[in-house]
Image 1 (cartoon, rainbow, N blue to C red):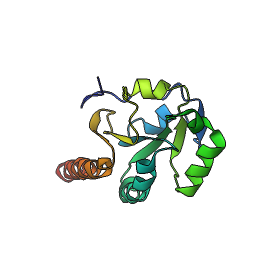
Image 2 (image 1 turned 90 degrees about the horizontal axis):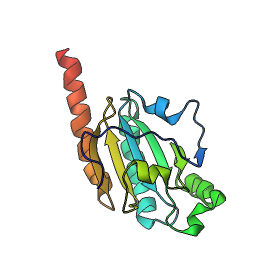
Image 3 (image 1 turned 120 degrees about the vertical axis):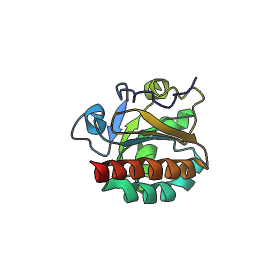
Image 4 (image 1 turned 60 degrees about the vertical axis):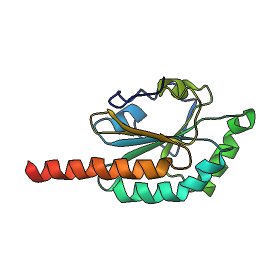
Length: 160
């Protein structure tokens, strides 16, 4: 069964490698911050096609506190080639901290039983799941969820 709205963000323990430098643990990095976690793979064409739209979306909300964590989840043996992962990160300008999940521990923790890529998980500042979307239209669903989440956050500031 996939994660449900309101579920807590899982721990990032179990990643086989971390890329794009993280000065603290991923769990500390996202603690108390709205967070987007997305799974991708070097062999996933839709993941690569969605990257420019995802980059635009991240840029729009970064200054408002959105943290992002990429998770490279291999689907095939060839996807476990770390040099290929690094090359894809460079080619597609993935500037997020990136977990490599060769052991599928994060896939299990996020209840991504089907092994979907791309799949996007949006958590609020309390670490509760607000939205989950997958596939080629996932960024569109994510856009709507981010607009709602940050509009609600803005109205909380105004009324406080």
